[in-house]
Amino acid sequence: MNRILREPIVTFLIIGIAFYLLGNWISSSRIKENQRILVTSEQVVQLATQFSRTWMRPPTPDELKNLIASHIRDEVYYREALEMGLDANDQVIRSRLRQKLELLMSNLASANVPSDQILRNYLQQNPDKFRMEPKISFMQVYLNPDNRPDLETDARKILLRLQSGISPEEVGDPTLLGYEFEQYSYNEISRQFGIEFASQLIKIPPGDWVGPLYSGIGGHLVNVTEKIEGKMPELSEIRDLVEREWIAERTKELKDAAYKKLLERYEVTIEEEGRID
Image 1 (cartoon, rainbow, N blue to C red):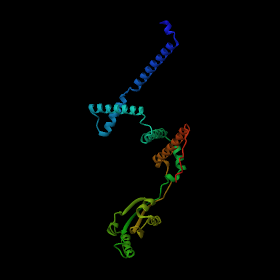
Image 2 (spheres, rainbow, N blue to C red; image 1 turned 90 degrees about the vertical axis):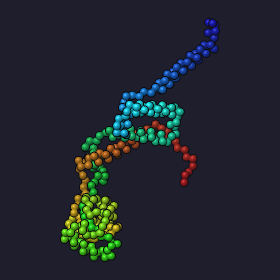
Image 3 (cartoon, rainbow, N blue to C red; image 1 turned 180 degrees about the horizontal axis):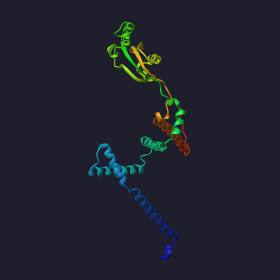
Image 4 (cartoon, one colour; image 1 turned 45 degrees about the vertical axis):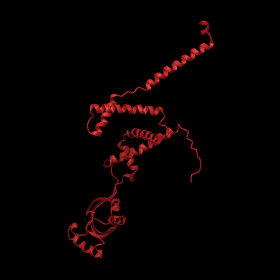
């Protein structure tokens, strides 16, 4: 027996078997570890909380049991799918993972709360983003050209009545526009009445009824009641808006910088099969 054990081929076989058994043991230990699913108490609370937000009540014991069972099923399928490589070359999964990574970077960026001085500098460096437009308050009386062959003559008659104090609701033609407009910007007036009307209106000083001014739907007698000049607001007036804009811009800068840094780890080759006209 001793002579057989001393044979080189026998020694080689023994060593091979030992390595094989050791490899199986290590693999078995690894598989067991990978196959262990732990549902923590925090995860159970999270499942119950999500249910409560959806159904506006806490889950019953049976419902919570089913939630946990569904969570375990998701985890099993997820691990098996990864083991089978089902995540490879799936554009939906790739897009979802990109979204999650970008969301993580956005959260990290937004965690940096800017000081008032930083926001004040940002406000001064980007005046066009935050400058308040001039505002105009006015009343209008609509004159429908389809009902008034001589609109100019009718306008002069109605204008005299308005200047004498008659209510706008008592004269003019029916319209869905309304009679009174409070603090409208030039762009808002342009969208509702047209650029030509808005350009004429901003030149009229507050005071009495004038007109007619013309829009795409007809004539209008107008009375400008208030003008608020455009201005550059103080930070205290629009701090929330400035902070949102600063965070959005800062987030984009950090995400772009992070992507550029990550891209340095890769060698990118683009194969051109042919020219696309």
